[in-house]
Length: 198
Image (cartoon, rainbow, N blue to C red; front, top):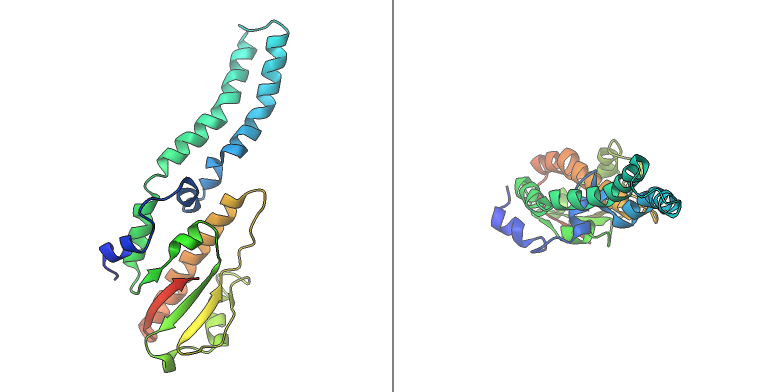
């Protein structure tokens, strides 16, 4: 287990809204541009209602609610994800080897990481590690042969231009599965010195 204080030092002191969102499957709903897009149709209908002189009708009130609700929901969800940093720290502290530079993953700067083994001679061959990673996803790829006990892995989540927060969460979720389901068990056989997101 990694010391919690060291885990806290390995991430940003404050998470941005997009970093918080990257840790949750619902994070994509915190995207205000998406919320405004959903609000656009009822807003147009509301303008039509008001233009027709129907300012106090039940339909107008419903349209006001439908126009405002996505934005308020997005803001409320953003507030509910404010504890994401603590959850990330807790997860890093639960891993039996240091996990560094998670910030780069959460902000979407990269989807690759390096695994450094304590004994370079014990590092698995590229294809051996690839076989262990294949059940997670066919898109996860070990990109290098071991060199000085270091292997590089590509997480393999394609960035979405329309919904980047959905890609960020998919990348974070897959990274955690790789660590929890493959690297932690591997660490029991061949000690991992550290894992660093590039």
